[in-house]
Image (tube, rainbow, N blue to C red; front, top):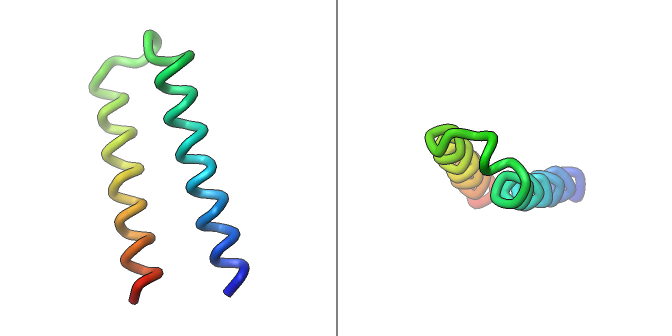
Length: 55
């Protein structure tokens, strides 16, 4: 399933990019709650994707 792997690769690149941007440029613009919400959401989606890949 190369298409699925590409999607996962794209997602994890996007995750790194978002975390990078958030930590570096946008941190002052977001309340800490918003940042934690973003991180929790990414973690949850990552866990779900790992579960789907393994099953």
